[in-house]
Image 1 (tube, rainbow, N blue to C red):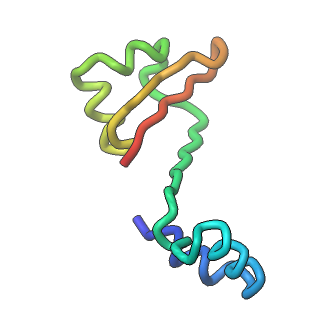
Image 2 (image 1 turned 180 degrees about the vertical axis):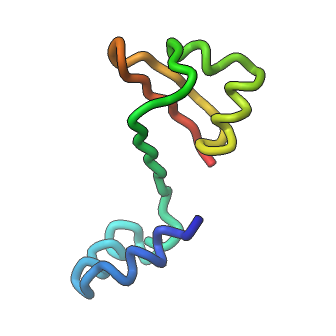
Length: 85
C-alpha cells in the first residue's frame, strides 16, 4: 500500500500543494487519510451485524479494512463496514 501523500504530490499543481500546506499548517504529508474500498459483492452476503462475529468473518475483513468500528445495513442490498488501518 502506497502512502497517498506521495501519490497526491505527483498529481497536484503547485497552487494545490500550497493550499494543502496552508490547510494542514505545513504538515499535509501527515494528515489523516481514508481508504475507501467499493465492491460489487461480498460473499457470503449477510446482514451487516453478522460480519462482527468476533470470528472468521470479522478476521477476514480486518485484513482489508483494519480494526472494524461499525457495520451497518444501508439498504437490503448494501452494507457499509468502517474500519481503520
